[in-house]
Image (cartoon, rainbow, N blue to C red; front, side, top):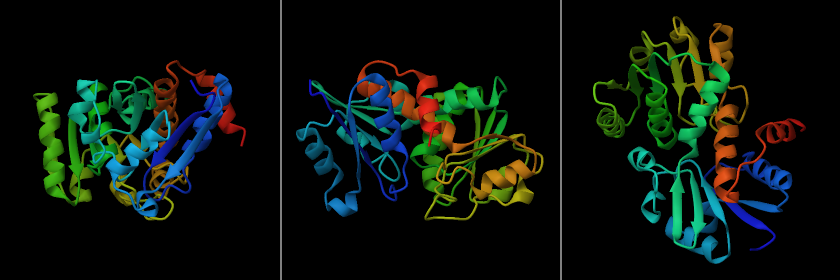
Length: 277
């Protein structure tokens, strides 16, 4: 085994990503030098199959996958967990002697982050904005947490309907509705969830105006750059309980570290190292 573990992140608009720092710090804590590189397909002028083949040939141990490639990479991988296969999106790839394997630590990380930030509360009825890769993982995570009703707000209605069908199949009896209207979707929701890039560095804005938050109890924003988005600032001003995108970032990273290294990293030590600056 090489003394250095090579990892990478495939995505667009990832210049501000903190993933390299998380994985390099984790490697230091675990006593193994780790190099983590940003891989932007349009800059490399390569297709997804070509990138995966190239980094595997170069001896990478694994990859993280972010927007907008979490669904596109799926066909190149073996997915051991049937729950992840149902989600239809992967954010972590491990190169093994048997071939590349796909995982979704957004799914497991969201569940862990929800419990850490919001305790034992039930999600209740939820309005989720966005039905892309992270939206799929979060929606299936919400089912695991005891979701009672989900309204998916999405401009691409066929994409949202496809996710709704997968959720109903996974949880028969779950009420799932789809709309393109945020005001309609947020009405009566206890939880408000942003799974779009809106609010991210380079995108700006908010997916839901503050007046539409009234009556809700908690919010989650998948965006973590910046740490406090306009969406979260408005929610805090409304007195809602908050799970920031940082918690998802931290726990999905924590779970990916275990996949890449084959053993867990000390959670408290990693969180402290990240906070040191």
